[in-house]
Picture 1: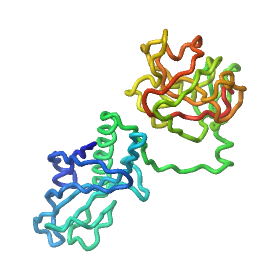
Picture 2 (picture 1 turned 60 degrees about the vertical axis):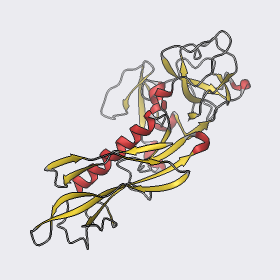
Picture 3 (picture 1 turned 120 degrees about the vertical axis):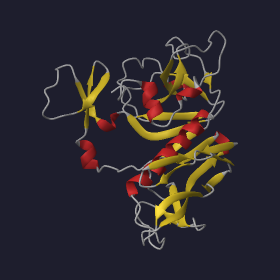
Picture 4 (picture 1 turned 180 degrees about the horizontal axis):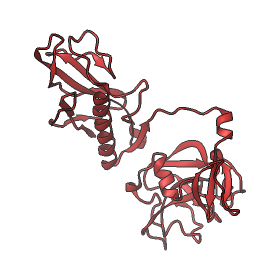
Length: 301
């Protein structure tokens, strides 16, 4: 399998002009890997004011999991251990990893860190889109600032007519029929891998389960799913896939098809077409490809 890095680096990192260079395609290898694009020349001034040339490359960090055809890629905003980087060096020495505005020992004027950040963001975003278009299950690395237990307790969601309206605003007067629930009441905190040929069942009676953003398929996609892959269920006798695509409520155990309201990590969300998501479909279903499911907490609460 191959993946392409769009080699888009400004010719002048101060943003005055942008050059689009030849894309760099490489063979994907199993495990954690780093790939550096061939260096390209960028226009820049030396410390003494003379025009000079520097070289820049992009370093992509990724992890390929062949068993589930998944690839971990860093988002453009990720700043952790496996963050993507821009490499800048003077004339043939583009080997020093540079991030933000740390440009010591390069004999170059201080570069504008917002422009460097934009380069990283733009290329990282396009690599992720490229991988999704090729059918990879993309697991994005993102910076997450965890909230304390006390902070979580103070975050509440307001639901109106079964749809999430907004975070609770203490200064807003809500309608008497609005429901107010903890922000932790829906997402189960885990994304699970549903392997090819895994069996599962529809949840009976899931209609009316309040969705945090108004759409269960969007909720699933927002947590890493790829809707372009379509319905997860194989066609069975009497049931053929059709449109549209929904975020289906599913369980692995036939005995839990009518789960207790308020249960945690029993029900998960995965993509189902209209035919397979029908309440009359009580048959065992089988996954036709590998994807993710999203556990729910406080089901139907």
